Structures are given as C-alpha cells and as structure tokens.
Length: 222
Ligand code: DC
Image (cartoon, rainbow, N blue to C red; front, side, top):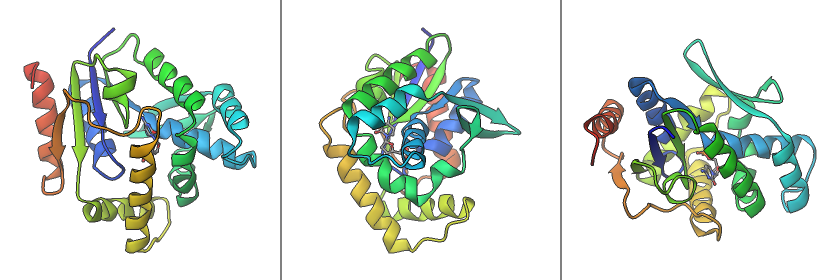
C-alpha cells in the first residue's frame, strides 16, 4: 500500500479542484469518489430506475465499469467506455446522488472498489468518508469546509462549465439539502475524522490551500 492522502468535505468546499492539484504537485494518482456516486446515479436515471429501488440501483452499481483518465490535462470519468464527465455534473444527477449514496450496499461496493484502486499507488482520494471509512488508517487526512454561500458561488461556476444557468438561492438550497442528507445518513456519513486536519477555505486563496496540503504531505506530518 502506498501513501494515502484523504480529502473529505461537503460539496463546494473546494475539495475537487484542490485534490487534483495536490495530486499533480505530489505526482500521486487522483481518485474522485464523488464522481463514482454520480456515475451510478447517471446510470440509474438512464435506465429509468427509481432511486428507491435499492436492489436495482445496487445491481447497476455492481455491473458498471468506472474508469478515470487524464486527457489533455483534464480529468475524465468513463462508464462502460463512454465519457460521462459532463453528464455527471448536471443538476439532474446532483438532485438524486445523495439518496443513491445512502444505500449501504452501494457504499460498501464502491468503498471496496476505491480500496482496490489505491492498492498499488500513492493516491489523493477525495470524498465524504475517505478518512473515516474507506481509509481510516490513511497517513494524511484533510477535512475541508467553507461557508455555504461561498460554496454556492463556486458551484455556479461548475454548472456554467456544463452549460447550466442556475439561480444562486436555488444552489444554496441544494447544497443545504445535500449536506443534510450526507451528514445524517446512517452508513458512513459526512463527518470530520477525529485525527483529520480541518481547513476552512472560506477566506483562503485557492493556491494557498493547495500549497498548505502539499507542504503537510512533504513534511510528513501535521
Ligand atoms: O463530491 P461530489 O459533490 O461530486 O459528491 C456527490 C455526492 O456523492 C455527494 O452528495 C455525496 C456522495 N458521496 C458520498 O456519499 N461519499 C463519497 N465518498 C463521495 C461522494
């Protein structure tokens, strides 16, 4: 097992963009576990399966093949060979991903897949439960948080990238709703691990938070 850097936190806390650059800076493999839950949700929508149908959603999760690839400096997600990078970022997927990710069998399957993906490499893995559930023994655990309105501004920029214009207050509500489901679910909820270092990115510049985490890993301790 290589070195694991676990980065957890709520939607819009800056996790994804930070984790990608931290991985590049350290030469580690980057694993976006949120993209995996989103990919399962997208397949569920495509197949017209009700997210309440636990057995069917679990079947979709266990039968699909998820891969990540870097293409021209951009991180892409593939499902059964199709590039779904844009489709998994739409509001339709965002609305249903939290209920999908409350299903214990889906979580157990994806967590095992995440452990396998990290088997032979040094990795930066980002999500909600990496430091608490997937790799409780990770050497480095970061928990990122930020004010909900700052997070909403960041999400607007994400949606613009996939061509969706969304009202600011609507995003604030979506984030609050997702935070609530993600933090209150029974199985591996969004929660800071006791031994994680907390970084509040509300007032931090992006480059500062990337540098901060790279320094922590390079110096070998918190
Ligand atoms: O980070 P994100 O917004 O792409 O994550 C999408 C959803 O996936 C999030 O609302 C909760 C779920 N998720 C999870 O439950 N556990 C993870 N490790 C990562 C994401």
